[in-house]
Image (cartoon, rainbow over all chains, first blue to last red; front, side, top):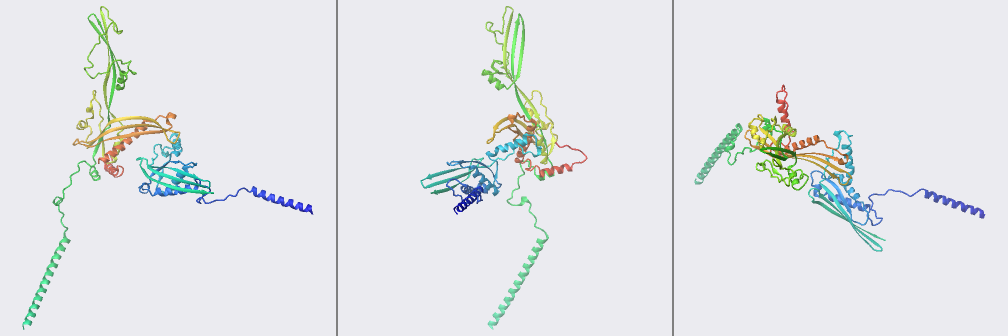
Amino acid sequence: MIMKMYAKTIHLSLLALSAALLAACSGPQVRYGDAKAVETVNANYGSTDLQIIAEAMTRSLLQSKAISGSKDAPIVTLADVKNKTSEYIDTRVITDKIRTQLMKSGQVRFAVSVTEMQSQTDELKRQNQSGLYKNSTIAKTGNMQGAQYRIEGSIASIVKNTKDVKDVYYVFNLNLINNESGLLEWADEKEIRKTATR
Amino acid sequence: MKKRFVRLQLANEGCQLMQLLKKSFLVCAGVSLVILTGCASKPPAALPEQAVLGRVPADPPKNPVIDAEGLKAESKSIAVTDIYFKKEGKNLVFIEETRQKTNNNITSTITPKTIEVDADKADASALMGGANSSQFPVKFTNLADPKATAPVITPVDPQTSSASSNSSDAETQTSKKSGYESKMEYGELRYLANPIRGLLIKSGYKVVQAKPTVSMPNQGDEYFDIVKRIKAGDFSDADYVLYGVLTEVSNTDNVSDIPGTKSTSHQMTFEITVDFNIVDTKTTQIVASFIASGEGKDVQIDGRDTGYKPSTAKLMKLASLDLAEDVRKNLADQNFITNNPGSAGYQRNLKRRLDDDATTLKVYK
């Protein structure tokens, strides 16, 4: 009788162990979420901040006199957005997002920015100087279009911590500068405050 | 009785009033009919412009604006010269004269040396003890000045000079002189004016060939005397003469970094600036005057590293095309041609050519 009970216990234990092993081998559960959903994992700079900033800046820029009052879609280039916060923020993602939204509006054309110049010069060199291309189809050197305006700005933050509270304030500033005159044609800012409590 | 008389009188007056109204109505209707028939038969005669009170007739245009109608009526002809130039060259001259006096005989040996250099630089260099100072140790004088070139023999001290010797019956004297002489060169630059001729043809002008100008020995600035050439008949029966004098030619070769890349940009530029005038051959009046420039540029990425050498012919072609474009803008600004030489002007010109005798081959330059 005791032996029978003992064997039954061993069988049940093995069954439970197998079930646990099978569950472990199946890996982590993956599910898609809403990319636009509000992200509040912590108070650091996140995807929602990026979306808020890009949307606000694009809307404001499209309403500016320099863009909306222009007969032809003006040519703009992206310059630096300086990260003045203590965090690592890829500011290029912000300007790229703004650029994409502006391009979709059709009211602005973009010239290649400084960061994209290497690939542009490499391509021109390949077409013009390799001697491999038909002359009539070559994208000629010296015909690139200069941008009328450049977009540049900065992101700064003020962070305050207590034992239970972390308060972060971001301010994103963007300027549209006329390259020829050096005049600031448009400027706007977006403020974001995030507070995390334990 | 009295009441009856008053009634009869009133009735009589009423009848008279009615008749009067009837008559005036008929008269009005008649007059209206006459006016209406008058208006319908002949239009109101237009008053001559001068007779209109307060309207001053417009002045004829001061500049000979060539409009579409004018071109249709008659195409003006224009002669376009090649681009004149004046090149100032300076020759550096060094003369060493050795005179030997033997008894009563004097023999002189002159050894001239001429080196074509930039005289200003050579002068400064020699004075400052630079590269030419050993070759030309004497202060420079202008040899064109007769006073400066008067024969001056420097007495040589036999004790100190190694270049002279003195014996009982022979004496040797050596003198050195150096300076610069100016040399002017006048001529015409071929090929640059052809795109300008082309644009004038497109604009509806008949372009006639100008005779080339040959510079004479000891030529002066009268080489540019266009009125003299017009009177000499160098431009046949052209209504206008477009001539340009080369102001400056420059060649630049620059290398600069391309920001954001590891590459460099090697830019070779050929630039010309020309002073243009258009003269009316009948009145010798200058009807357009401007300065135009043309630039031919060749850009090579990392060209310095690859030892790339630009094509001068390509740069020249680009510069002449650019010069013609600048000339077109200036001529349009001064109302000498229409703003769109490729459209209406071209059509007119084409029509003019088609109207010509088809049996004769004509080459328009």
